[in-house]
Image (cartoon, rainbow, N blue to C red; front, side):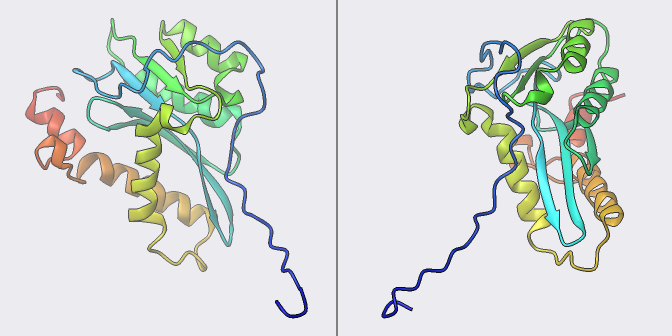
Length: 203
């Protein structure tokens, strides 16, 4: 090929991005890469990640608590739309007790700037924080969660015979296992829920 000066044209797989331009004013980056929290429900992180299997694409929208990495809520679907993130936010808000108003940090994706998301944030008296445009390190803790999840759950398996519905069920099971059983050295070799129980934070 070199002798004949031939070049292979290969298409690059594009990483999923929810950024659609500046659709509304962005709040300041209040979290400022400080992903530590002294108590649950002080700082939440969210983003959307994509899984591509032979049967199709699946999207995960989680809410991560900076206190211990607990996945507060999540939605799984085949479309990265407003309903995916709004339903996840509704479920996260339902877990809050009175007088808890977490800071919710995200990237600049359009999902987090549309009226449905903004009204939910306002009604629950939550604070918004956003990464700088195109700056992945500004939401590094959430990206780190995605990386660990894909290394443990997604990449080692062969998904060729798995349907979208089966994949969604397996992903949901993994997330429940992550909260309930997966130990973390930083939590004293306990899972997030076990850690909260050890501190008397779970009834």
